[in-house]
Length: 291
View 1 (cartoon, rainbow, N blue to C red):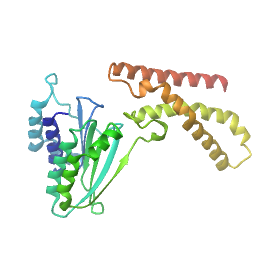
View 2: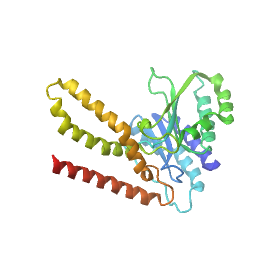
View 3: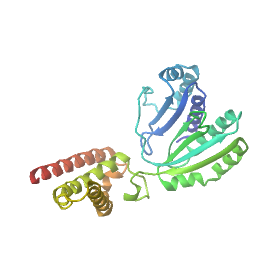
View 4: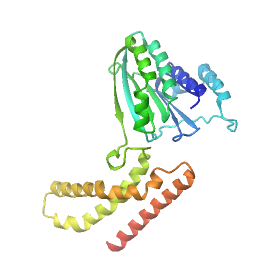
């Protein structure tokens, strides 16, 4: 990310956070190393969002963005959505309690630290959420990077330490923790993490035949046992088989699709989806014929 755009996005986050009804703002690339970026703005009501979208502040911010855009792009796509699936990456969640009356100072500091972190390799966007109620008086920030190594490089950087020292007098307390892939135990943690939807489709591919075989062969053996006990035994076997060795084998065989190289990326993505659909069809055909 270039310095001018890094500065612009941090200013945009700060401006949106001051709008009436602001809940959260999420800035992220379409995918790792993409030149296309998404800005997702969440407000308490459609009316609050409409006020922000028509505000002069927002108009001015997009006017400042125009010189930074790629010459081939003719316009900024702008639409209202109910939801959008998050990108797969490593996320650090930071909750901050700001000293009363120092919210403006904190927002200015958040603008500076966002501009700094966005210059580090692997940066995948930031989500900033204002306090949502009287009972939850803290700001929530999600900082995303492509890999744990790249996130740790930012967290341990001198730039970040200096910025934290600068804001310390204005912050009552803060804490952070890390979110990783929901299937982290089944896939190597090194390198870019595959999107969750890919991992889910692979789990389904491996789990379906196991469950079908259990229904056909294991269920008759457990017919005389209590339903809870029989279900527990079946689930224990399914989880054990899927966790090892089936998912390891599947991840190895489909690694070219889970983490496609940037060269010919979209061809690999399309081929991978077609491969998964074909494998689903084969599984269904086999079990429909056998059982």
